[in-house]
Image 1 (cartoon, one colour):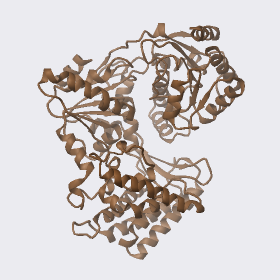
Image 2 (spheres, rainbow, N blue to C red; image 1 turned 90 degrees about the vertical axis):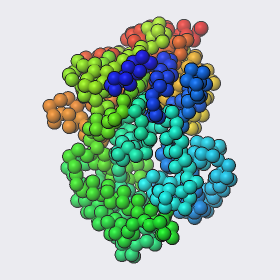
Image 3 (tube, one colour; image 1 turned 180 degrees about the vertical axis):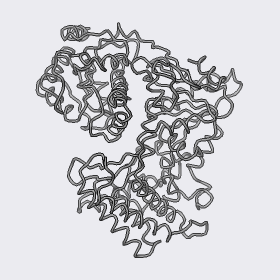
Image 4 (cartoon, rainbow, N blue to C red; image 1 turned 120 degrees about the horizontal axis):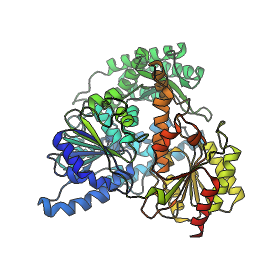
Length: 631
């Protein structure tokens, strides 16, 4: 891997590297990166990997290579502005914290809770003020114990609201600017996919110029770029914008914003949730048109933000939110064929309601913005689907010559293998005798199969479910018919649940999609991973449905080109929870017979997984689990 990356840098050729758990992937790309002139940027998808790089891998590597290089390499973390304390915002935090909370998109407290809510936030702001006098970085992750999101929003500044260091009264002591300055001087800059996506969409002026970009957890990048390109309208956001701008715009303009918020509320109430396949319905179109006109009038009234304005920060905040609403409204009204629009509604009561728009595809964005003027190394444990790189390469915007190609113009690939002996360490058991899953939730036959497997091992099970309903049903069944400790996602915070699962050897942890990756429990605490059904995108997932429809319209199979690759990545991530070290042993049990019986895609999905010893016999899987329990 080190040699391949070194060659890619010299040849200025992009590289896809698949490297499984335990290969030392991070050291594999950090080592050749130290020989590159100027900063090298490493982007990760998860906070866990970012922390591993900054707290463990980079300090060890810097110390190890100092005698060789004659100096100690430096590194820095670069996050979005909202991760850092803003001194200008802190000055007004006592005024902002309760007010902002009342008009956030989150469910508001009941009438009798306002005073308590304001008092709780006020105490957190006082603690932040004390921390502000001591912190060197202003990074939220260094505030221990932490504060909730509402309190942090009152003291942090999103990039869109920032007036810039030159016009801000606290520009000389800005923590976000200081982080960027450190990044410009460092040898290695560690950032995240979300900020990388924003950087690409804003003409690359956030992350310092660099010749080498390493994208770790690269299978996540396209989704993060899609999220960064997504925009939405909610009545609460319009109301909040009106409140921020009220003192800066004429009363008539403020009234127009209030009317637009009311119209959007009515429009969203009239339209069922889901993708809008025939443009905006009349009520929503009228609301969005009214909003576009109102925001344009408000922006004209506010005018430019000048250095001699009495409060440039608040003026910029008001202008930024109006500008974002205006741009989103225009985008929805234009109804570009390459955009997808849909309505989101909370399943519980009168919760969140939003009109959302996102790009149909980000392949073109990645092709144009990701690879220009730099070498890109994309690394992940999941880059081959069906045993090939071409599907992921295409999703990352790389040219693929034909369906059999393992490389294309300007890029090549490498699978470094794994230190694990998968056929000897693990079994992939597919319950082919079970009926094809139909209704949502956990079918009775699958529930009984789950019970037999867990009882054979005596716990030590990670259950990955396709829905919260199925996970809850499984937890209730196991709690009723066994004495095992059953941990259910949602009962406590995820870090606490994972810690308990790791420490209580007979426990089971059941949950949904956020458990399918990032959970790292090596050893005998996790020797059975159960997957209730193949993780295809739901039919009501607007983007996946729109992309499938576009593929069908182009003469391809939307299911084969969109749904199956999504399921393959998710399934590989879930299966990867089992073997985390060379000493691990266990069974992956898939309670979805289609992995064996569906000839059109079953083989492709199995070829996307590690080469476990494969069986469809229940007695073989139960026998192996019984032996594990005995050992």
